[in-house]
Every structure is written in C-alpha cells, then in structure tokens.
Length: 110
Length: 113
Image (cartoon, rainbow over all chains, first blue to last red; front, side):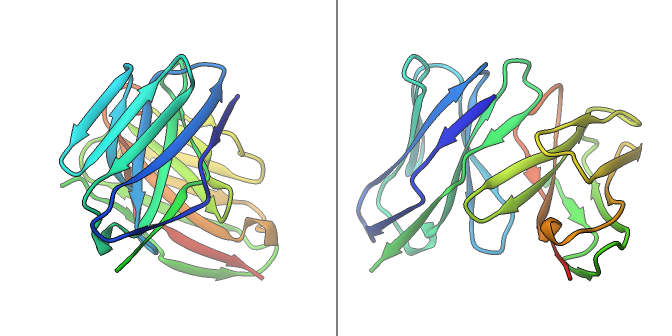
C-alpha cells in the first residue's frame, strides 16, 4: 500500500518563499506528482518527478529523493493567488494508480 | 484544451436511491478515473478504466460500480446511496498507458440525506 503525509495547513507572506513537504512509504514507486487545487475547483497539474533532483518551472520547483521517500514543492515570490491546496500523489510500480496525500492548504497573507 | 465534464455539479439524494454520476472527456484519452474527496482524507480512488468495457477497482470500491460503454464516457453508479457516500466526486482522464498526468473535472458534490 501507499502512505503519504503532508502538513495540513501552512501560512506564508506575499513575496516570500514556502516549502511544502511530502513524505511517502510505498510498496512501489513510479513517479510523484504535485497538483494545485483552488477552493471549489478541480485540481490542476503542477509538476512531476521520477528521478532524484530538482525540477524547476517558473516560480514553482519540485524536489525528489527516492532513497528518503521525500519530496517538496517550493513556491517562490508568493502571490495571493497561490492560496490553494497542494496535493502530493505517488504513482505505483505498475503505473496504474495515483495515490494522493491529504493535501496542504496554503494561505498567503499580505 | 482537454475538457472533462461532469454532468451534475450538485446533487441531493435520499438514502437507498440509485445515483448516476456521468463524466465525459473530449480528447480521446484512454484512461478514466473516479475519485472521492473528503476533508482530511484527500482524494481516494474508487474505480478506474483503461479501455472501453474495462474496469479496475481502486482503493475504496465498496458500494460503487462503474460503466464504460464508450471511450469518452465513464459513469459512476451508487446502487443504493448511503449517508457515508456524501462527498465530492471527481472524475479524471489521462492519455497513454497507466496513470499519467490527470485532467480533472470540476466535481460533483453529492449529499445523501
């Protein structure tokens, strides 16, 4: 099975940097995804890591360490519109299923 | 843009009723998924399908069934709704083999009284 942990809530200030962590214990691993979900809306894809290291995409970066079962999403130059839930999801070995963590609700304050 | 459309945004049903949730995608994706989302529990996979007439159980299939008669349409069925099935239901689709990048629908909020 898969067990995925994320902090429930985080608060940060506009313009700052925030790091959202995700740890996982899984019976198999074939990639890790991050999704963003604004309140009342559908989740949208942010990033994907399958190899160790950092993937950068504009203000957002995602890091993976497979040996540690650990990932983080880094958001730079925070904007008010970044207030949302951030979902970490792990794909199983067969690549057939995504298992999601509980999500981290990020509140950005002026 | 890939579009995943869920037929009902809000539904209110009574215990014991049969409920159909419909999902249609317009980009010829092979894979379709049904999740439910509950506070503190995140998204949990109910069923998925990789081809027409094919279905696989996810983590919480009990009390649900699905139908995929056409490639673009994936239906979730609650044969006899119960109050613990009150939830937000999200449909998603993806291309290729396996669970690649998912595109989600806007969700269907079901309340069972």
